[in-house]
Figure 1: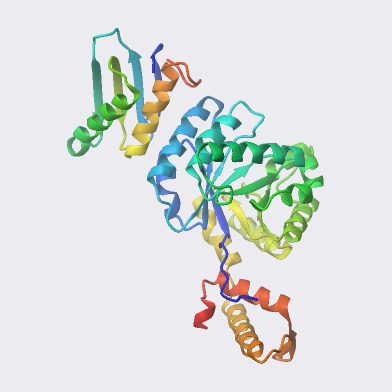
Figure 2: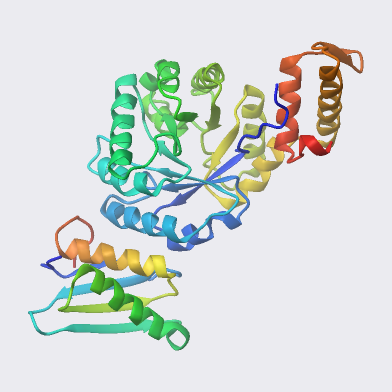
Length: 96
Length: 297
């Protein structure tokens, strides 16, 4: 998946997560900034899941800003997928 | 007649906005018989993609145990309908709900698309049911032909708000303007021997009004009602749940039927009233709605 634009998905509502993605030049790697209301308990799990999902999409160079309000794993994956597809221009939605 | 045959209980179906994670993950805890995960009217136009993806992930993750799970997709002629089908059909929820169906050609086209997607994923054509919404005057006129088009259609429902708009009704909440449509749709469903659901009651604060409407549509023959707020569940479930007296009477009829069946008697009397097959069928339905196992009465 080739990222082209800054994009976001999700919200600040309880049980949701707001994810913003930004394409990065080749070789920069992944810059992930995570804030979560359950950081102490699940911060590592959230990061692990984000990396696993990015691996599945074959994305190596990206900046991801995550503001988590207690989202379950399917919500986290869904919001990341939406932001990535919006960034890649695969579907429309809210763009920054 | 098989007195042990079971069907779904469908008194209440709770609409859940498809882009609301909190409600999606809690959908089955409120006590509704079914959840309607909504990709259509409850989702803003610029969030259709987000809702579709969220519902897809939730369907894989949440079991919704004890609840019938239906996904309402967007109409096939909108820019979102085909993407919805491609995302949802492979996940095979209990049913998909098709909004604003108006003609037989339309339902033929949609079912063909659904089955092409199922073929691509090597899925059977008889597992996921199809629920059709009738929401326009043209749909009401064609409802029997639509409902009888495919054995996959196991329920139809009336969409009161859109129908009122299509009929250019100024005041719709009293139900007068859509009364003919309600009766026409019930009759079509009964002729096809499928379930039929009433429209939502939008005045969430008016619990007495909801109860009156639920009692009225039960008398018309509706199976249940779509609802938009968890606080409406208890009232509608209560209206559609048989009373103690109704349960006792039904149990007596079914027991008498089983006894007479062994002796080869088809028509008999209970408490001085004639009982034949249709009466037994109604009694079985009462027991089913009361969650009473016929084998244990």
